Length: 333
Ligand code: KG4
Ligand code: ZN
Image 1 (spheres, rainbow, N blue to C red):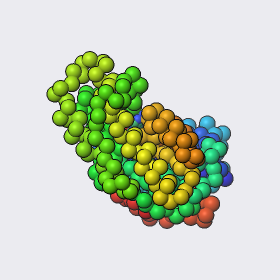
Image 2: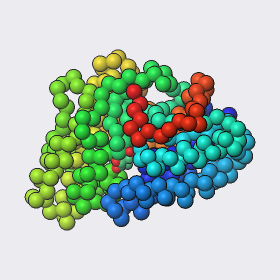
Image 3: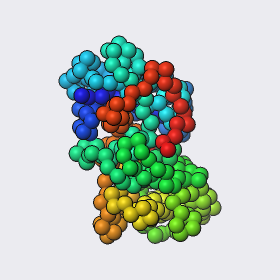
């Protein structure tokens, strides 16, 4: 039975319908990136107002795309955290209203569990024991997955998330918001070894991350750089990307070695990054490890991953009370 889910934790309003085996029957995203770009980042009040405008039409669009009536949906789900309170409230209120109207269960979903399980969608299921690297705009985490809902935190960032590092550096060098995809685009034309930016590995065995030193290093380098020169810009982007992705790959491999786990998954907005995907694929092949990368359209925020996570929980008999509140700081583990 399909689950309809809504995602509105930040600046994307999204709706999707997914079956428990990870088949996406429909998925739509209404991005507000063009609006927030004017301000150089997400403005919560503006995001919330735009979610209100788009959420209902999106529900109708995904039902039409899937060829389903509301009565054929088994349960309604929405992201309940982490994220912006005023944004989370729009998706959860709509999902609760649909659940009440159709007399069906409601499920509150942790956005990070959506990312975490997304590599198991689209033919890669079922969910099985693995090590997950989640790299998004707000989080960088290594998690051991034992089963759905049974997660152990192995490491996280002590300061900036990987996506945040991409975005902050992009802003410093004059690229538009969101900076990650822009750096990725520029990096394709550049030399990743043109500049040596710091890679924080902590001590050799640590699974914690730190990206704030990179930001400072770029800041000190800035006065020496002629960023009007396209070759310099591309080289800086390629070198920044090399520094961030190098640490992500090595820590994931280290986590595999420390736990003895041979199945690795990578998800979240930064997992779209072409340099990261190439590096991971080569390194895992060399190490004899199996790699599941979230499909590119499921890396950045989307409701398909929320519907899939909800479907996994629903299969285990979980539902949420209608009184369930949103939590901007909801943690995964
Ligand atoms: O998962 P996501 O869509 O939202 C959060 O839950 O945070 O991740 C957004 C982050 C942003 O920081 C964005 O710059 C980054 O993912 N991102 C990328 C790429 N595409 C998105 N970073 C590097 N390379 C990309 N291609
Ligand atoms: Zn996200």
